[in-house]
Amino acid sequence: SAVISQKPSRDICQRGTSLTIQCQVDSQVTMMFWYRQQPGQSLTLIATANQGSEATYESGFVIDKFPISRPNLTFSTLTVSNMSPEDSSIYLCSVEGTGGLQFFGPGTRLTVL
Amino acid sequence: SQQGEEDPQALSIQEGENATMNCSYKTSINNLQWYRQNSGRGLVHLILIRSNEREKHSGRLRVTLDTSKKSSSLLITASRAADTASYFCATVQNTGGFKTIFGAGTRLFVKA
Image (cartoon, rainbow over all chains, first blue to last red):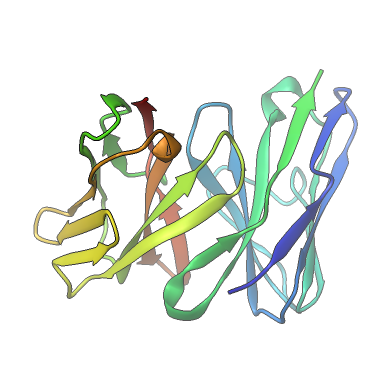
């Protein structure tokens, strides 16, 4: 299993600003994933972050809005840029363990005013 | 849409009753997983069933998979108030890279 931590756990931000969310894993992993969970909804994959290469974004998500860094095998950041109230969500990072299981961080609850 | 369908969207039962949740998906899969989420916290993995398996058990959980119908069900037997949570199915799809796609989820409320 993998232990994942995220910072911050929650934040309240003003529209037009940006927030960077950090994800730290206790072991080296090749791929890290970022998900968004809008209020009352399921998880939607934003992008897959491989160390040493550009992140791969899903349809509907772009790098300018959600830039991702992956400087090493245990760490990644997701930035939510130029925020609007529609960006209010829980943002979760995850890693894939043995056999295809996903291990999730506790999430970052973002509220944009 | 990334998501598959789950039904029911919400389910309210009495403690001791069984809860059944269904999930359908759209593409071929390598495996299907069920997760639980308490009150907007991180997800916890419950059980994984591979595409060549039809049924799997883990404690009070029973999962079935019908690849011909692209559907799965999660049965929680003898439910407890502590089972109150949202339950999501997720499929690992190989679409130019392996990625996990989540269903819409079922919100289960177990009344004591």
